Image 1 (cartoon, rainbow, N blue to C red):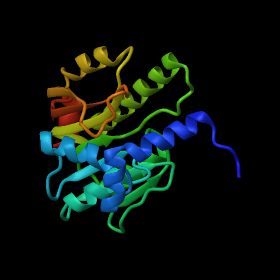
Image 2 (image 1 turned 180 degrees about the vertical axis):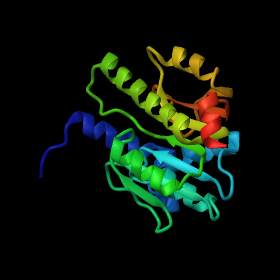
Image 3 (image 1 turned 120 degrees about the vertical axis):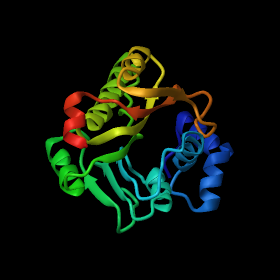
Length: 215
C-alpha cells in the first residue's frame, strides 16, 4: 500500500472532523456543497418552484441534488466536463462553460426561454501560485456573468463561488451596476480558513439589448 503524504493525511483528518462532511454522509448527500447552497437559498430565497436554472461547475452533483429536490416542473441545466450525479429530468451538458458547443447545447435546452437563476460553483485547478489561481477564478466569474447576459431574464439572479483576492472587489463593484442588489456572503458550511466566498446578485438589470432579447 502506498504511504500517505503528510498533506493527504491532514486532508483526511480534516474531512473526518468536518461536521458538514459527516452530515452529508449521514443524509446521503453527494457532497458537503449541498449545505452551502441550502444556506444561501435559505438566506436569499434563490430557488423558486418551476424556475429555469443553469448550474455551472455542477460535478459531482452536490448542488444538483439539492436543486432537483427544490424544483417542481422547472428546468435544470447542469454543466461540467466531469461526471455529474443527476436525475433523468436534469439536462446534463458535458463540457466547459463558455465553450461554443456548450453554449449551443444550453440554447437548445432553453428553446428560446430565459433563465431565472444562474449558479456557479466553478473553481480553477489550483496551481499553487496564488496570483495565477486568483486570475483564473476571476475568469470563471466572468464566464458566469456572460451567461447572465446571454440567457438571464430581467430581475433574475446570479450566485457564484468566488475567492477573496485581487480583482474581486472591483468585479463586485461592477456587478452592482448590473443588478439591483449584490451581497458577498460566506455560509457556515464554507470552511472558515478558506478564501471562498459567494457573490449573490439579485434583480438583473442587464443592458437594453438583453431586455429586448429576453422579454
